[in-house]
Image 1 (cartoon, helix red, strand yellow):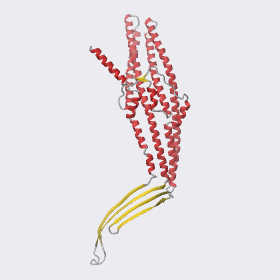
Image 2 (cartoon, helix red, strand yellow):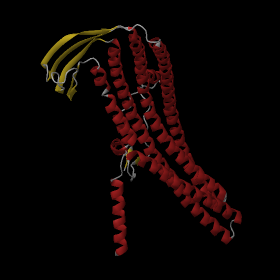
Image 3 (cartoon, rainbow, N blue to C red):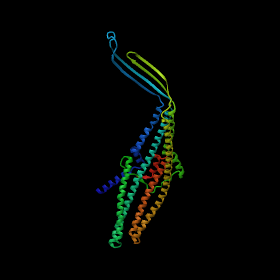
Image 4 (cartoon, rainbow, N blue to C red):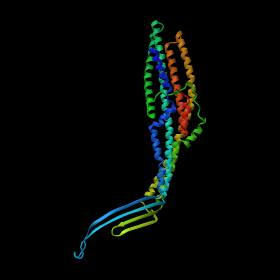
Length: 438
């Protein structure tokens, strides 16, 4: 009675584990909450959003309150007859404060700095959007890497079982004299090889699980797997050029580089403003209280101006530097645009070649299964030898591993394509998630 009960409990536990297998969207939500790289990008965004406020503050009035309080004491030495001019004691206090307001009226460099601050905030927003897309790609890649390793291990273990049966069959046939020792040695060699492959596959699976854990911040449990015989959709639109064009214009790396060019252009104007005069409105209210004199109150308002005449060629040098940096920013933009276009081309070709590869491997899997059955039957009737069956088994499991890997890589290329085009969103994970099963 105990053994059936134990088997029932184990089966129930396995069903519970499978029912709780995390799918791609759930793993992505864990990454949103725990990934350190994404958290860093979020903090960088919060910091970047303060730049506009800081730039605008240079155009707003500044108000300051200052003052001093001093006490002076000592002897006042008089000359002449001490009888008629005795020494006197000096003892006085002075309290002074002033409230001052300064409002910039014309400071072109500060205006350009304000415009740059708005562009810098936009750059930080583009960088965060890129970080969001990168997280989707990183999570999906780590997720499918685990599934790829699991499928490879499952295939190797199935191959090990089949090879074990073939080895046992070869030994039995040798014992009864229907086969030579060569068949046994071949089966043993195949078995030893698959055992070594199993150890390597187990190690690879642990490495891939550790990589996923690094992103989600906790050990990766059971994962939902790809359903058998799924059909992967082709990219829409079905032409390459729209994807490349979108990558050249909407890729977040390109957007950030375009903003950096605008910042560099503004920097040239800001540095040239070093030749321009400045004008400020100033107003102050003060109070000066002295023991000997009394209280003096002052109110003032006016403008202050300054005209730069010579600064040791510093302004001219900074302008030349800014022009060179603007040229650098333009070249960086062109390099980023070309890289985005190339990424879109590679991903698009990867999706389409992957789809063709999947179809070819599906057909190869059917053929490999038929070949294996034929070789098994031929081995039983004596027209095939043991090595033929082993080779057919090896071919079938190799084809199945390649098919599994091709499906995952095709799905990943679809995500990379949308990322290169700047259109990848969390909602794009939903169609892929629908292909998974617990």
